[in-house]
Image (tube, one colour):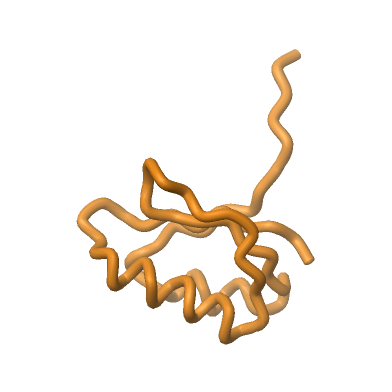
Length: 70
């Protein structure tokens, strides 16, 4: 399963973060890491279901990727 970075939009509450994590788990995701400086987490998530996460208006969904400099 691919890894996705989930971050909450500005002004989102801790309850909305908790709900996003619960939704991800309930839909077959496995939380890999929880961020402490920002409201967010990384999750292994089935690619055919990622659109269900994207419908949450309080979060940003981005597939994790390796970044290289030159």
